[in-house]
Amino acid sequence: MRFQSSAEMLAELRARQGAAQGIENKPVVANRLRDLKESARDQLMIDPRIIVVEDGFNVRDYTLPENRDHLDELKRSIRENGTIKPLLVWWNAETKSAVLNDGECRLRANLELIAEGVEIVAVPCIQVAGGNEAERLLTSITANTGKPLSKWELGTAFQRLYKFGWSEDQIATKTGYRLTFITEAMELADAPIEVKQLLSSRAVTPSLALDELRANGAAAVNNLRAMASERKASGKKGPAAKPSVKVTAPKPAPAPPSPALIGVLRELIDDVALTDLSNESLARVTVDRVLLLKLASFAATEEESKTVMAAV
Image (cartoon, rainbow, N blue to C red; front, side, top):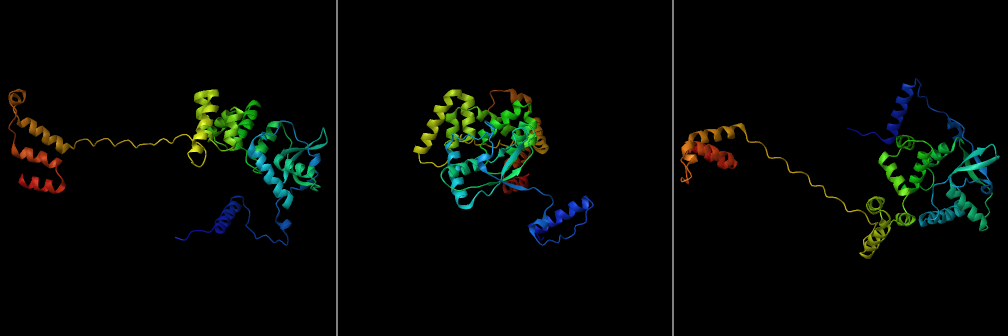
């Protein structure tokens, strides 16, 4: 059997889609990249200094070391290559301003570089629908640009959507995250800042933090610190995690005795006088030799069984 290449699979998928929609799959004649476009989505070049940031809209926590490190990496990249990924902005008709929807890390990096004397005239932006705050927040969660939000940062966003009246099931459907992930993320969003710092530095895992918070509340901070320190002192790599549970497969239930074995046992019991069985002074009772050989064949190996049955 010959396996299809990726290109062949994509071509077959396009053909099926075209057939389902009644569209003939004709080759596209193009002389430049713009000839291949299906729709227009203009990229705007905007001065980063005039882009408005809504106070408290972004759920990213810039007090955590990992986000400061990310900003520094972005600055080095932008200094050399400029801003590659466009920021997402929406137009506020009341204030006549471009308001940031996604890309605050890139915006902050550009503004810091400008303050340091780097000449940056404009950054690439794409306009998105303004809508209400819940819809804008959903766009920032699902934008798939820049540094992914941590689990506890996403939890803050989920909490806000919940306060807007969204059920956890609706949040799961709209964002694509599993329901268990959403509930755990919202729990971590309420964790003390010390726990978030341990998570941010990858000293402990989210699952361990959740277990400790649920079991010990405020005391979880000291417990998690101790676990992280102990792991570091032992020279082990990676964050402290909750111990894995070894799952032992249950032993299979013994097979029930076969009807043949039960039949031999009944014959053997019937062959012994009841008076002999009830007589406690008798240490031994007499049974039929042939019946005993039949019974022995069930406990013997295959070769032994042949020998036993040959004697019957």
